[in-house]
Image (cartoon, rainbow, N blue to C red; front, top):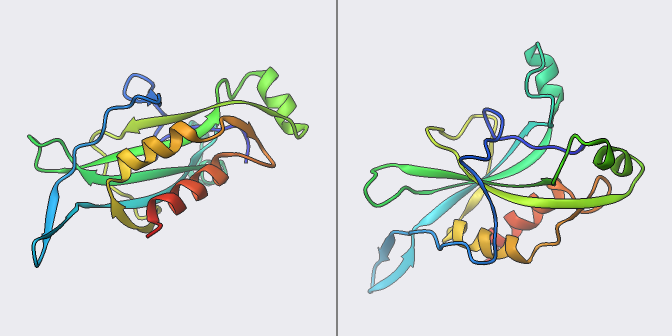
Length: 177
């Protein structure tokens, strides 16, 4: 994979998303009662999607755009806000801070590492796509993804810690029982 970013279905928008901080607000969850008085939080679905690399979102043909889908993101489908009767999609991804800058691209292509960032983005008006892979479900996934991400190393490289390893580690964390 190359230095990358994106959102399933379109380019990332920083106005909607945010960088994670260690003091992110907890996600709202719905309680589900499972007989004998036992309660568990609503189970969120955990998806993995491939999206285009930075700068490749506007390629002229679908064939070329599909070739550029090398960035891996985790999308959590959970309960929407209490006043909404819908689900919410929240995307988490990991990429270099300035993914198209020569000072980022060249060292990474030579096997080096650079500073990265983990982003959280609410995907407004989106639904899961057929191309996404459903990995499973778990309780309180957005809140748990925020906590996991706040402790994750933000040094990124093509051949070590990258968007693929972040997505794999996050999914494993969210689905462990």
